[in-house]
Image (cartoon, rainbow, N blue to C red; front, side, top):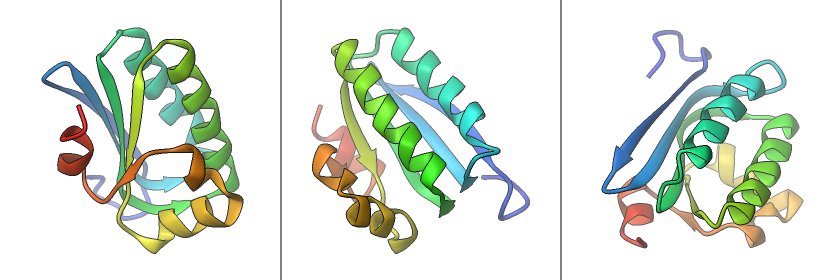
Length: 117
């Protein structure tokens, strides 16, 4: 987690062949490039699956939503099964409003997302 609550952090861990990309802080126009880089590298590594951990996000802007849509396409093209882990209204509400929630398998924790694999 970042020290500053609004600061952004992205890191990846491998759990049994599944890449788990942890995103924390604010996901907006300024931080999307760093998140995209982390997610692209995770997909390119060829994991058996990908979990985007959004439980640490404190803000999700439209740029972050657009990034998620693009990541969904990239994962599909690479035949990588994608799951989102999100448990807060901060993340879930924008996904619902835009209808993006229908395009993703969303779980309430990383553990429940990993249980799908």
